[in-house]
Image (cartoon, rainbow, N blue to C red; front, side, top):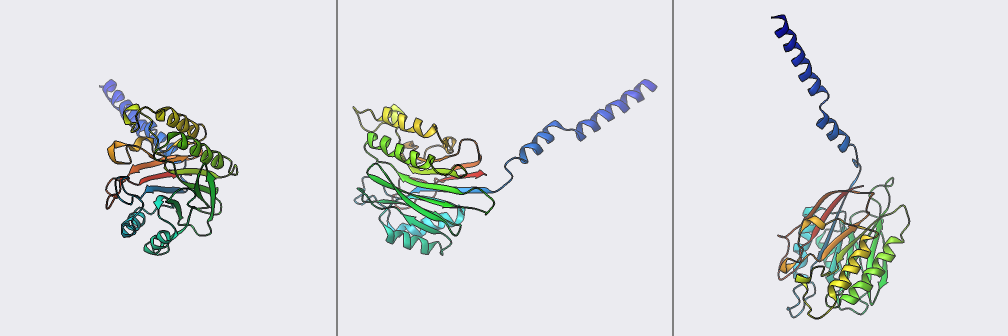
Length: 275
């Protein structure tokens, strides 16, 4: 009888200890204590049309829908590709109710441009040459005590893999040479063809060139959207957000496949990290 009572008491003590010192609860609390600081939300989107259209650049009539998506997802910064020029950026900022400020890259040898939008006030914008094209970057802070963010919007050549490799190298070299205390992110449409089955140009070395370009990016940056899936028609993943390999924690990576309007052939990629 006493033995049964003693065993019952010991069992109750063990259950109480298990509840008090639940190892999974401890791990959860420890994990939640890491990167509990500011969250940074980034979005990249090629808002142009399929190449078969008469004008495959962004269409002004679609900009209100683009603004609606941006406002609903509330990113801190946005990288856009294939705008026609400054007039479209002005229209888009108006649809965003001036909650964002933005800048646009020079056209260079192309007939379309990239743009970058930032919600934080006081951002600095820079253009830089990459191969025969230009990219545009924003530098800003979420809060004064946090590291500065550098966010690049880029668009590599859609048809020539050797041009993509040179362009990507120039963008990466510019980005990795930012001040050491900066958190640097590179986003945009890189048009990489990394699998032979996806290659759209026969009898070329596209896969080799694109693999080398992609590998060079990964030498310095992390592919934050790797698990989010395809970003464009024909099940292609050609839109990327690259970020610091170690100093941020990935919280969300999503392709917004219900956001495209008109004859757009890309979907926006939304990334959220903890700084």
